[in-house]
Image (cartoon, rainbow, N blue to C red; front, side, top):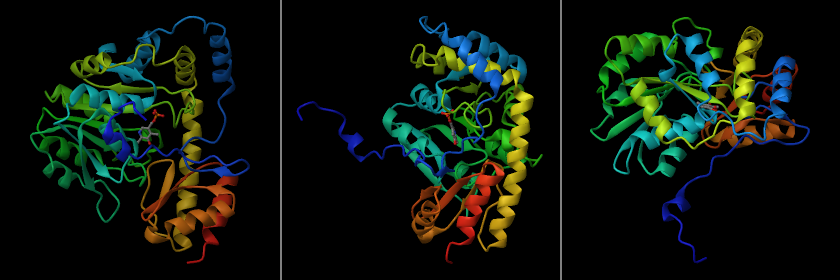
Length: 355
Ligand SMILES: *Cc1c(COP(=O)(O)O)cnc(C)c1O
């Protein structure tokens, strides 16, 4: 090949999406298993009649809705083509090649890929023995080059979450010119009232003069719109303004904008589904513990099984039961909580895994 592409991309692992295998139960991508609500499908069908036009590039109506719902100003909201795209925009908006992005490891798989694609350095801070973000070690790892810190709360893939006081201590320990992003992709599944609501926490920090705290949320998980790609950032105006500068025009399509608004209209119904998933999460976790597995307390719509070297065998065993989990070979398996029937199929696989 004569075309010269970036040599560093050869070393970059591609993002591995959860596998879809025909006829198998997919518990690999933390989606909600139930299909979209009829009201949302209807809104999408209506929007389809207008797709010869470009969307509103700034997603004004959706931004206004989110600002009202969360009691922030519209300038403090930025939407993106999934929150993954906002993660990338945040790195683009804060980092040059000399700068560092910090995150726990293991955490959301997209963080290292995005950081490398943009061309910044990455600092990975190992999780604690208890599979939690090591907030003290993260605060201690800040250097003059640190520009951005991703705190995934609850953490993907371990499900662990930190109480508000712990996040506040962390923020206080980090210089206020370092942007701290609380990624709340799974915030709607949190049950423990001590866990931080990032948006409330961020607003308190802003009011106290700390303008380096922001929150990422998504319509992909609790709101069931993974296939349409809409996420949003709640941040001080200086941050949203920088993020908008690196926005690819029209990245959030018209159908996605309409579906997100329709989902906010149907929020009660969608959040009731989340409560059902939380109930199932408790049942599945208890059954796994009963079967002898270690399962960290999870506040997300998945469980983490830190199986270490047995992860690959567990994955194969689940596949033979037509259940697709997300295996991180050598570390553990992440399994999405689904409907009672699908969870039972997974539990049948897990309890028959020879240990
Ligand atoms: C699933 C997930 C996202 C985001 O998703 P989008 O579909 O891009 O909105 C973001 N952060 C974490 C930690 C996730 O697990």
